[in-house]
Length: 236
Image 1 (cartoon, rainbow, N blue to C red):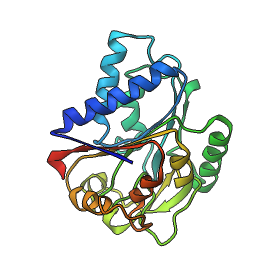
Image 2: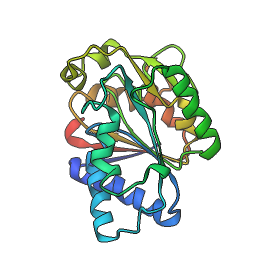
Image 3: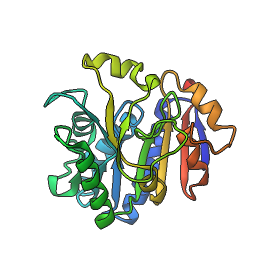
């Protein structure tokens, strides 16, 4: 994993956008794994600006959603679906035929994870996987554990994740999420881990020990042949 530290969020986001745009220029129909949350928002805004200048640049890109909460009401503004739609997909005009997502209203989360896993087998591997890092070192919703799962799965959310500010704002008790497993993430041709936001210093300090530890899922990225950790210095 290559570590790039930038002075602020804007510079971090620009580096990520440069990497993403370069890869899409080489392979316009690549498979992009889109993450929700604040960490990639700056990247997505720069992708939107690219689209405004060159409306055809993203017209072949394929997208797949990284994860989704279980138990939110239909139309919830806290869903990953709402987040990625409004921050990126609608802004760069990704059509439904080029987008695969966990259904946030599924009545059978386990079967939904199996469906996404089958779709990955058919249309993967992921070309670019965008990740944030949790305060406890989780990536996607792969939480710290003595054992980590390779396939898409229903994840029990840790107490640390549940106590994060974003979850507390939901107003509905959440216990689970659907997520890409470590297999799909590690099979991605490029991984971009964005390290930014409140409370990330502890996880980053642990990551920089360069030890592979399932209790710090992000540490698995040290073994990836083409992973970037792009760091907002003000957060660490």
